[in-house]
Length: 279
Image (tube, rainbow, N blue to C red; front, side, top):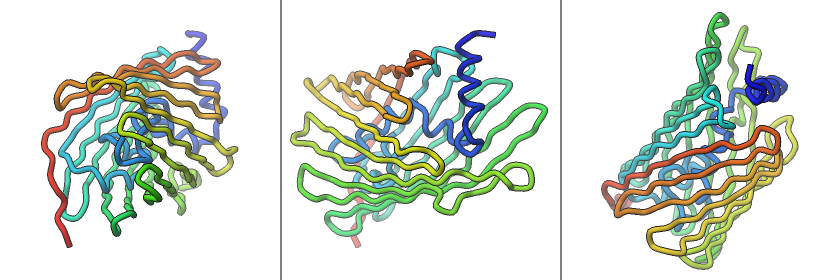
């Protein structure tokens, strides 16, 4: 067996089962896609996967596809498809994600909605169904939910909080396993339309506090640069996006100190812009 695959499986197996069940949503691919989630001037269709309130200020019909090969191993490949659609007073978001290999696979299906609650406050909800499957052992699934809000403090400064699975869903034999709860708070600061930085403090049940730091810089109209890190596992990522009219192609990679590189690709399409209905 490939040494890195064995190491990756050992690390995954050492985690509580509930943490394993969030493998797809906590891995580097969604982490990169959620970079701009804490400031509306830098969000994109993937932002709501991290912060559901980011949907409130999305005004375009858009879709995106993202994929990565975890640690360079096809067994840890993961893919995500998202779409946003202005609806009524806000915007709806859809996501499906899947990953794994023949011996172990996971799927996530989620539906979110965000809207403004006044001039400076945006709120959002995201409901998901997560399933893991192991041939010979069967499959297990659970419902999850996340709520978030973003508050505009100044034109440049936003603060946000989110809560995931406060009432943990149960799955597995006799429904004994529980989805882990997560509580997060952070801020996004954008002194201009070209630069943005954010910090978020995350606490997952049974785990130490994880601090995520991201930045985004747009030196040219056709070029976007991103980078970030998380303290829990000393994971770093960086990437570049290339803009052509209503399409953007991102190439990125994540570095894990023991497992190595996770190369990834993301494509975004913006089809139509629509103003939200007013009350």
